[in-house]
Length: 450
Ligand SMILES: Cc1cc2nc3c(=O)[nH]c(=O)nc-3n(C[C@H](O)[C@H](O)[C@H](O)COP(=O)(O)OP(=O)(O)OC[C@H]3O[C@@H](n4cnc5c(N)ncnc54)[C@H](O)[C@@H]3O)c2cc1C
Figure 1 (spheres, rainbow, N blue to C red):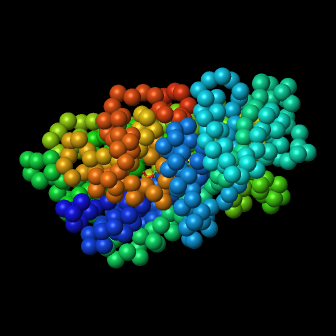
Figure 2: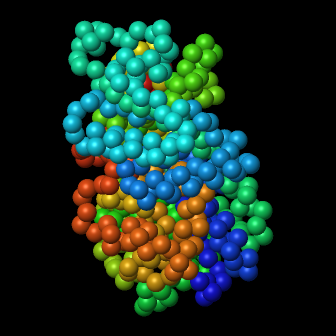
Figure 3: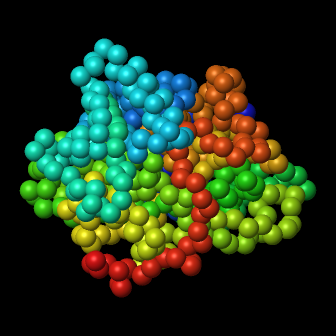
């Protein structure tokens, strides 16, 4: 680590900003230069959203332990804790004996372990009626099966009231403000066009920005989330896709009525419903997702072929993009059962949120095997946000050679080679990502419709 006097970090999402803070704290004499396309909170970054779930209910005991440590740090942080809302999180499923049941049962065990000294934080939901009442109140009456025209999907569950949601935009702003207090962290806001290498070698030399400026350093950390594949060849170690999110405006009466609901997720259908926040509610689906395929020059130093990647298309470049129809239909079919007042309400806005997915759902914290002095800190796989208080320290531990060997292995490049099954940490629906250009709709036509 001593040989790295100057470090460039590309990306000011949770991976980049937490690493900058951890490095600045441990190495006051090093110079850390964070470069992002925009000033944080970056509007289309994966780390920035109205809400993110902070939960400890993990199938994997290592993530469970890390999530408990992280949740405690969030609650103990005098600034970040202000953005945390302990509404709890409910996990439900349809009752079938499949992979979702196994994830449900192991998550429940973790939740019970985490709440061993406060059993009142666990609430069990033993029927579709109880799931419905956990949102709408004791006197509420769910839609009858005949009205649904199918079997119910939200059938069993539990609430872990120690979990909650965090305002991911205000928190990212606060982490950025914290980073700015270190006089050895500098920020530049411009897009990195490419990495430059010493001629004829694989050794990183500098970054070239779109505005023509270049900056050199001893090490570059690629924390560019779903955009990372344009800077280095990630082969199939990470795939980039986006999942659908929508917001509904609520009346003050609805906000009051639902204010105590937990984030309610259905493992079997992939739907996540959030409690009212700032006069609206958010719904998302863990779908197989959407991709935006482009062809680029292979960014690795010794290659000159073309490669195909999926690259973020967001509302910054395509402001009139609107959620695909099939996504909206599945969300509404769930709402008909679990949130009937929203079933036919128009979305206020929608977006596709980009993911950097590894095959195992383990993060990618490792040196690039084909480039020297290029460290990868990405692969959030739809569950990394909650680790922001500890992630940067783990990345610096890795750089020092002090990271727990189990984590080194889990987060390595090699761990991901040839894997096809994820570890259930942030389970995905079966199926293949669809090409965005074929399915995106236009907001001027769709907004307000239904
Ligand atoms: C819909 C959705 C829901 C999720 N829910 C949860 C949840 O409830 N709980 C949880 O723990 N996790 C959740 N996650 C996962 C979590 O949000 C991500 O794992 C995490 O935010 C990824 O952070 P990142 O730093 O890798 O990427 P980002 O936040 O996207 O940061 C990358 C940054 O790099 C910058 N950048 C990219 N390319 C360049 C370039 N060439 N030059 C300069 N800058 C560049 C970008 O502008 C961006 O700011 C969710 C993810 C999604 C999509």
